Image (cartoon, rainbow, N blue to C red; front, side, top):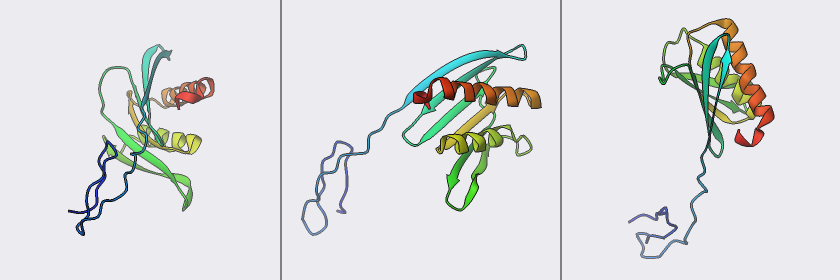
Length: 140
């Protein structure tokens, strides 16, 4: 049996019969923050899931997930790398917002932007998130 680590910190024996030292698992902590606002006469809902080194940001007007993108900073480029995971590749709302939030927070950011595309609305949604980051940085 190969050396292994159990979630409770117990050890397992290696193939030569010696026990590996006990390791404590990394702390796992999730914080959920939800808020809503009226933007251009639309009720927009936001849900932020803060993880150790990443964020999941859901934005929508109804409970659905039609898009998902992820962006992260790398040492190779000043612009965060981004990929569209779910949804139309023609709609750049989730990828654009994920890239900007990754750069601002220096965290891996998953963004699900589920509002019909309107250029004015995306900018205002981004401003609202930035205001929330400024007002409550501990939640991001």
